[in-house]
Image 1 (cartoon, one colour):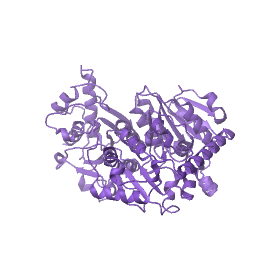
Image 2: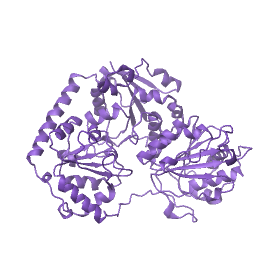
Image 3: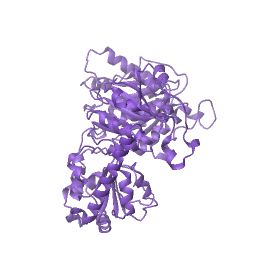
Image 4: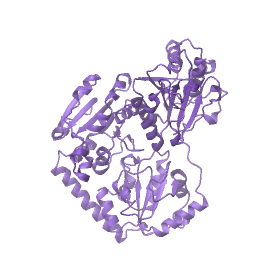
Amino acid sequence: MNNTVAKHIIEQLLFQKVTDFCICAGGRNVPLISVLVRLKEVQKESLNKNLLQINIYEFFDERSASFFALGRSKATKKPTVVITTSGTAVAETLPAMLEAKYSNTPLIILSADRPKSYQNAYTPQTMNQANIFSFLNIKCWNLDENNFKEFVFSSTTKKQYHINASFNDPIVFNNTVTLDSKILAWLTKEGGDSAHRDVEPPPFVSQANILESKNQPCNKDLLAEDRVLLAQFFSKGKRPLVLVSKLDLKHQSNLINFLLKLNTFVYLEAGSGLWGERKLELLLLKAGEKTLEQAFENKWFDSVIKIGNTPTVKVWRLLEDKFKTLPVLSVVEHGESGLSRSKQKFFVEPFLKTFCDDSISSLGITGAWGRDSLWKEKIKTLDKQFYKEKHTRCKENPFSEEALVRQMSEVFLEENNIFLGNSLSIRHWDSVAIKKAFCSVESHRGLNGIDGLVSGFLGWASGMSDKNKSWAVLGDLSALYDLNALWISKQLSNKNWAIIIVNNFGGKIFKPLFNQKILEANHSLEFEHWAKLFNCSYTKIEAKNFTKQFNKNITGIVEVVLP
């Protein structure tokens, strides 16, 4: 019966074009792994070379596996499945599930469990794991041989799920399991990369349930009461700043048109997808946080429009206290406003559609931003001053981490993919990097942790085309946090990636805040032997020689040592 339960679960996932699986070594999840092994054997035996690809990645650590799955899901825009055994194994996936929830990334945890009668009895390797993600309001199926047919999986993009399947003893590895003929017919129907294809489902699967794979514009309009709230906001805010943070828009042209219509100052973060957009050149503030904070202190901005996820820039946090009287309009892809004092939010697609369909004035919105008034000239002058100071600072301190990040942005090519670590890496990048139109820029900005970044990057790179180099820029503590991540590197078909580790021998982000060494996690470690442990290529570069020693064809681990 175990095999029947496992086969049903895997087939339901396949019907929804979920084809990427991270399996973690264990005993209780053997029935699930048996089905996948049989699928791979069918692929190998098939004379049809265009067989739809099912990807299986093997792990020993559920934490690394789940962050890898998170990264891959970000690249493919489809959920990746992490298959775990019972006990603490499923708990190891919690950090990645948290990041998935807060970054709106699709992720499925498929946990094997001991019989339901064992729960709450402290039997070996047993816990009540069915509702471990309940506080995140994540859908959970708690299945066994009695109710497994209730599991009919349907999904839309960017959702998280937990499937908990109980299996009885004895556990047997059976790679002769008979697969549904409809599944086999469907899998062999057409060829191509499973991450980028549309395949017609079997006739008994509703087309409406298939994962969204086509970019369809949002046809929803703002409600009448929302239009009233917009008019009220703009009646108070005549000199708004627009902050554009992490976004994954299907139609960037709508956002560009909105910004051009509004014609006020814009601060773009790296994840906005708008770096290098020449149409916005005259609206951009380039000096970063210093301009924003000073302009707020001088009361040159009287309101803020935030579009996207919670911003990285420091001034966003200051809106909670120092600038708490400023009106804030939050436009989000998902979740909440990002400010404790402001609960009002608008969803980005209908918000932008409203401004694309209607003129600014027809919405009852008028302001001083439509012409080059005195406040604009003051901010332009201030931004030029601070930008010049920043450029001079990088020149005078060429071996600083800030200057190093700027040099990276200069030598990376626009066709490259860039993955930015949290802490100082992304902050320096937002502040000083050259604003090129890179192929893709990614980060884990849901909860902003430094855990799982190496695993997440490798998962993300695995879902990108190997025609475009993928770079990660991470701090030394981020790498130390995720040392076993390189385990998966030997299994990746895409080898065109490199991880740059900026080694400043500790966590320096807190130094200017507290100047307490106990908070810095200082160390004297380097990363050559880490790379050797996993047979990865290794290159060491002294920060003072970065531009001379840098080679765009470097792969593997690149350690850049700061003085």
